[in-house]
Image: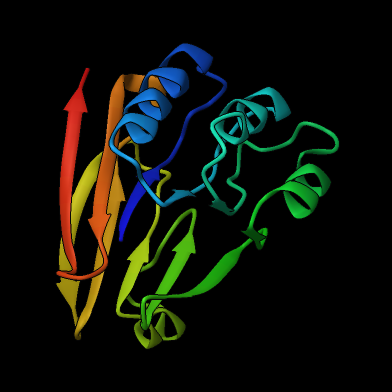
Length: 156
């Protein structure tokens, strides 16, 4: 299954739409957003494409009502650490990951944001990945659950 992984959209609706158009065209089966939406309009923009959304909040998600909106509209949501089991893989989603955080090592893959940069590294059999920031351009990661591979797309 192909999963679109995005983060740090910070209200940039134009970039969100561009990325979601790609996701729709390539028939992604899920969207993971690692926080820092900025506003409910950003969430609505992603949901308009009809692809199941899995999400957390970030430190910039302070608009009143955004947590409740995600709670009732995302396929699955947790404000801090989202735990997913997709295609038999334990996946964690958090806004700001600490590689030393022992609770994150229960996952096969952990997606995070916050730093506005892309990264992929292995730490103690757990893959940690950041997709880059939507606010900076057409930046996202494609996670393929069958192979466990991550492909980054960065067009700033």
